[in-house]
Length: 149
Image (cartoon, rainbow, N blue to C red):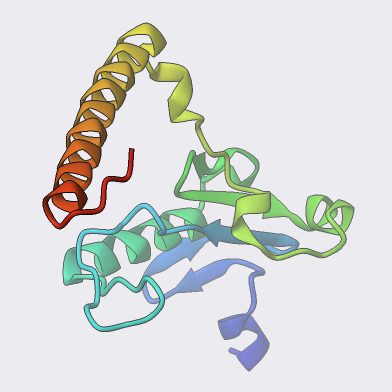
């Protein structure tokens, strides 16, 4: 077996698994939603993947490789998608996963009137606290002989 066959995407038998031909396909994954284990003390947001998450990534990859998988329809929104080279070329060879993986606008699921009522109540409470703070500040200055009204 040649090195190209082992490392390539042409398919065939590999470690007891039958792989499909994946030439001209790239599997994009975006794990930004996996935020359960943040790495503390880092300037950028970093997450340490646990064994189960690493196994899940490996399972997705192996499923994508497997004979019988349709590479044209291999996708889960906000997680992964198999993309053909033609689409990548149309995107000026950009290899940023977010260009290819579908993201769901979770704001569409929001109850806007309920959310606006909640925000309105928060603003009302905030403005009341601000008035109280302003009154305390005015009284403090008045107490030391400097009226600021």
